[in-house]
Length: 293
Image (cartoon, rainbow, N blue to C red):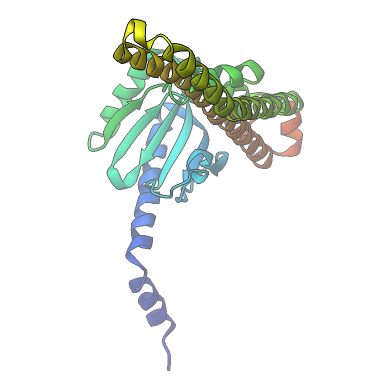
């Protein structure tokens, strides 16, 4: 007779190593987040290839930044927006359990915390998790972190998304933010196509004029000097068009990030509505507030 207990044991024994590792990573993240709750409220979590059960639950969503990347080589991780109890500042904590690493990402919480508050948070994390490596991810000029943060904050602050009471107004603000992202993307297309259209003909005409016009001065000035001047003029013009092309690509990247930020805010808002009863959603009370009551 077939023993059911034997079946259960054998199925658990034949679990793939990566599944066991993933379960261990999920539990490690859950343990860290529960410890963080001692000094901060978890406002929302973002997950990449992990499942982190929490009780009481908090709004959860996929990590859009890494789900939408071209290459799939990112380690599974979990991120959380936390609001510290003592100063009310917002921070984003990223956990990479396979590397025993904790990162504080500042790009999403610009203007929501101070450098002193970040140092206090680092001290608490260092005391709570001495075996984990801690680091701070600063702002990137290449990715346009500050401009993205300003564009998002001008329409809807992160704090309002995480704990705001007026859901209808938040919907309006998110629509505006998506509109801003769409317009940024369209502007980048205009700039990109303008550069593509103008660069070739302009360089051809300029090259012809430079080489024909300056070439006539070669007997008086010298062939070497004229050749250098011709190359410098054409090269400088090409570099100028390259600059505008890169600016268009840069704007496309920022527009994409604004759009993803708006989508992230939308998912957080939907999760908040799902977790809060209808009557409390109208008054803006969260589950955390209900517990204190």
